[in-house]
Length: 200
Image (cartoon, rainbow, N blue to C red; front, side, top):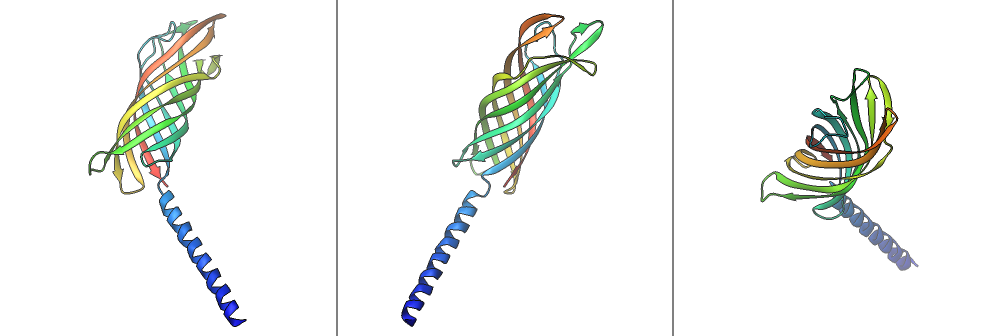
């Protein structure tokens, strides 16, 4: 009877030990797979938006990413970008804002043995364009799909933090109604930003 109890205790201890080893090894393996990024940016339109000649814009983005392979991951986030313009209605200049969601794949790979990585991203947008006259929204395109590509370099500060300057190209086609006239517009721009990344 004592032998059966001892065998049962040994089996229980072995199961607990194996479970703990698996838990901690899996936990350490998963560390650093998630990351959060805040990215302020400056935006340079590459063409007119309908009749509007857009000025250099500014904005920001917050994303969360999950690395499911050694260098490959997925990301999703929310962004806001603002552009002034020379387009006027009743003598008041119009402003344009693009807001919505981003998602896609990212590839981050070390550059040799340095603290630098190179970054490639490609993904989609689910964004809308608002037209503002002063504090009033006078037109909203509704959400629609666009796409973006991005390249950059990351500098690692230890295991948790990185600074990631990058250049991206975005394009979004929507319809806007201004002064009872509906027209198709294309928002195309280059964006230069600096990502602040925290891994966990």
